[in-house]
Structures are given as structure tokens and as C-alpha cells.
Image (cartoon, rainbow, N blue to C red):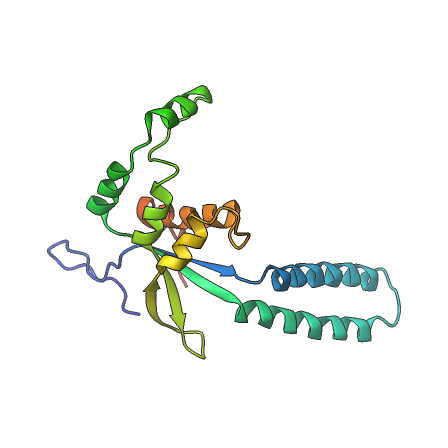
Length: 192
């Protein structure tokens, strides 16, 4: 990747728009299996550290199971990409979906404020800013695809559909906010 160069005119080149990648496992059973196996591995390592004998075969089997479970999670993970749409369009989008008077009243009761209509803005932001990373066999990104109408409907209009929960949608909205309202801070990279 080319590094940004500063010309004598003060112009910085090679600046790319903000994006925030958010991998999400579409199979919660596989994800939970990884969590459970990692927990068992810690427990087993603790027993080994305490000197329990003959646990090496159990650890080897557990490592193989964990490797298989991790691959299942990888196979069932979709990388959502939240893209910056630029300052002007982002401001317009928020202005287009201002909070309703009722939402403002509700927010005021808890000493909060809403920047947008909490019912309508998220779907519009997902449609405008969120993409699915298309990947090849080597897991390299080969393109970005907008969410289709059916997926948006599942996320926002089919309230009894258990596929999507508030936490998942909240994480994706947070990714959109990161892409549109933050800057990439890497911190100290050292000298080497």
C-alpha cells in the first residue's frame, strides 16, 4: 500500500475515505461453540498448570475441536463494511431524519437528546453506508455489495423475525457512526 506523501504545496495525497469493517458471525451456534471450547481450554490449562497428569491427549483433541469450530465461524462470517459518505451527505442524511417531537420529549425526560429519528434514521443509514464485503477463496476483498431490500426488511420491518436482534443492529449502526463521525487514530507506532 502506498504511504501518504506530503508535497511541498502542503497537499496530502493517498487519503482514503473512512471505513469500518465489522465481521458478524451469521451462525450463533458456531460462535458459542468457539466460546465454550476456549473456556474449556483455559480450564484444562489451569489443571495442567496445577500438575494434573496425562491431560495432553485431552488438550490435543480440544485443540482440534477448537480449530474446526473456528473454521466454522470463519465460514459463517459476513464482513459488513461501514463507509463514510462524506461530510455534506452525512449532514444531509441526519437532517432528513430529525427526531420527532415525541422522541424529543421522551429524550428530555431522561436528560438525553437524539440527533435523528431513532425509528427511521438507522434503516436509511444502513442503506446509504453499509455494504457486504465480497471475498474470494483466499479471504481477500474483491468488492462491496449494498444490502438488498430483503435484508433491510428483515432487519427493520419484520419485528418478530428472530434473525436480527437489537445488539447486532446497534453494533452495525455504531460501525456506521465510526465511519462517518470519527478519525483513524493509530497512536504511537514506534520507530521500527
